[in-house]
Length: 114
Image (cartoon, rainbow, N blue to C red; front, side, top):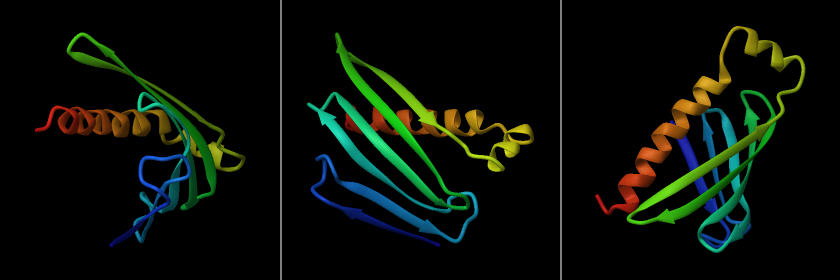
């Protein structure tokens, strides 16, 4: 089971999406819009509290090109010791890439009104 909450003014700096799950894969955390420059550039602060505590910053830029949109995503995170040892056994970049690919598919579906 997962509990979610949305806070702040939707689509504005300071708004957040938080989750809490019994699943160790999903854990507990919040994503907060820290900066929004028009509706093309957004900076997100990601705070994960469980299964381990870590922070990340994501930058997303949407650039319209003809009848398509070019999406740039930059993800910065620092996994502290001893959690960084997990990277020897599990590839977090692969997990993040898979989740971003799914998110981009959903963004495409929503933006095209499907």
